[in-house]
Length: 411
Image 1 (cartoon, rainbow, N blue to C red):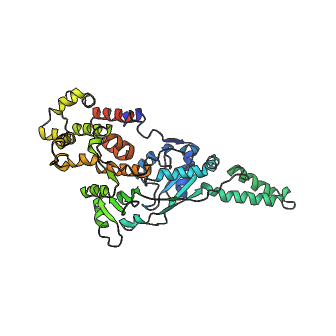
Image 2 (spheres, helix red, strand yellow):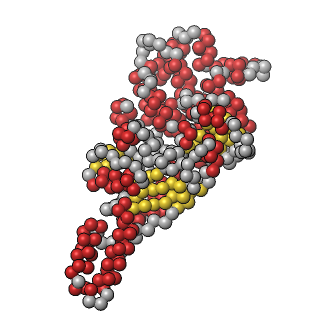
Image 3 (cartoon, one colour):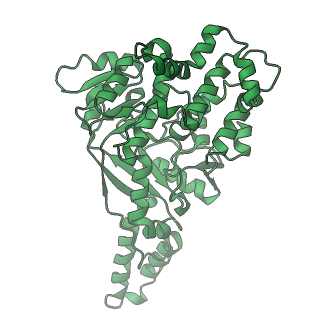
């Protein structure tokens, strides 16, 4: 990952945590019912998730009590606007934006000497069956301060009122209580520590529950897409809910998404785009073996690209260039079918969210499409960074250079 780090493409916006902030972070973990970290320094993202703590605990979802109970931690106002690098839901960043938009000033004040624990409560204690994800509706976002700071504020105000009563102003015991409270928690008299609960309404989304589920419910009929085959097989046993259920690998899913006007594919338009160019080069790279030139040069130089295209066998060549061959033949006759000439995963990779979708839905469908057929390295980086990093580890060093150049030129 060093190359990615050097060009700020690997978790470059994490916030460093050390010193007193580590102590506050651990208090949040304890308040939320988790074990403390033994690390003395680490980094966090917008929702308070840390890759170093996740590695220490060997649990990337260490801020969750099961699939139905995710949490967050705010220890710094710098978390405002920061990415959520491993979101449990596709809407996690939007929820954090709502939190800072509503409570930004109070967060600035509270995190001077305290920290905030967040509960994302969808009113579901635990998931039992895969289609329990249909219960997602409104998420209640509630807050708790470490050290019960709100309670300490009430206690401090009570002591002040007691101090003002009668001759208590000369009572040294009360003096000591007030001074001890102020020394421990600061002067809490004029601070606004009340963070009222927020409501976030879900629509279509992706969740990591059950090893990955897409719920598309803003269209003709609700569609549920499962990433894990075992969970899908369990879900299709359901006879109660009126929903369409698919596994992400089923070709029928793409047809249904087109029928519901969720995705589209205009090959004549797509071949003119950088999107197609990246996918075609990704395909060629899959078949390059023992090259005399760096892969990056082969993919960037038209002469070298054609040279190596002609070195692979004719069947593979047709697979790489299937879209262009199909469109050429289509000009002469309508007898040709796209499925007969364009390899299926390549064809699926060329689909796009339908132009009628909102920006929010387009992002979700882009993520679904890149998970169906991950052939556009730029879109994979944009819409599923976790999978991008896993794939990156398997690529040739020179291909990595080309990938980094693609992403850097589009950011």
